[in-house]
Image (cartoon, rainbow, N blue to C red; front, side, top):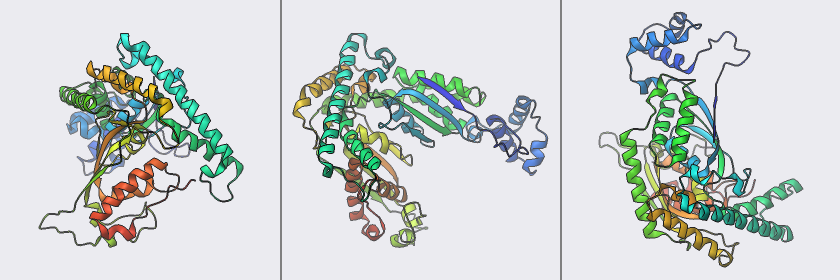
Length: 448
């Protein structure tokens, strides 16, 4: 695992702009809020050659809490190389106000060599050989199915949806994506990936505190590396980023819930699709919603257009019983509102193009190892899961954010399984909000 901080500096043409550290920026803006002077007057009193003294002087004067100051540091960029897909998922779950990207499964190494060690993940020593053997078999199944599907699509081009008049390179790319998108359910959740995030010092402190409070050793190792890197950019504000009792207690209780549900529901039989949607349109009696839903939606040229108060004030919670981890990794990155999953294996998804029988022994072995880890109460059970593991997943947000997600995840280039999941939820939403039907654009996940 490697952690790298990326500093932001003014562009070369902006020689007249003051070059300030994140903490100096935060302290200057804090002083700005306690003054009737302009920002120029405040900056004129700052000694850029000795910023630490200026920071301490301002922070002693304004006496603000560290959290409110930390939010003023601007975007601090951190790149996390070679972390497990589980840790990447967890960071996005925690960092609800970050902007970030994760390496696509289409571009990372699919091989047992691209796994953290069993010790790094907290796999018990006596189970480490079983875990390593299972991971190797899982990658072998992925490669076998990828090669088989790629061969089928080459021999029968009609299997792959291709835009009219597509160039040969596009046809080849879509064919390979067709194979990968179906074979990927055998990929281990422990596979290494890369993540880049940008957020303020305040939110980094919360993220690191949360990671440091989790029971998984990889999370705590990442917390230390991120903290050490951020101390170079924001030393005062990152002091508040160590493990804390309330975070530890909640993490322990969530792990216990996951273990209980996981053992009760552990299965590698596929779950049939079920969705649940709850729409709450209630408003205070002294401030009723006056805008029709159609007026909130009809003026948009596309999903990026502004929606009205009728949908922005409407609360929506939607959930699936059977979200495969392959899809969860992406849907979890819609960072509005709150997302929750116990991260268990209540079933195992394989697309219709992959026969289950040849892989039954592998999936039985994988479920047995997951059960053994859960029975021991080990938080490392997450690293025995494959991307086909199906788990319940809930997301609560506002209707405008939900509509954006539904249009995006059924639109051009969307993965076929995303489109199925979002179409099912959208149908239920439109039953409860029928006035939106003519103005929400459900796509067909056509290739791009």
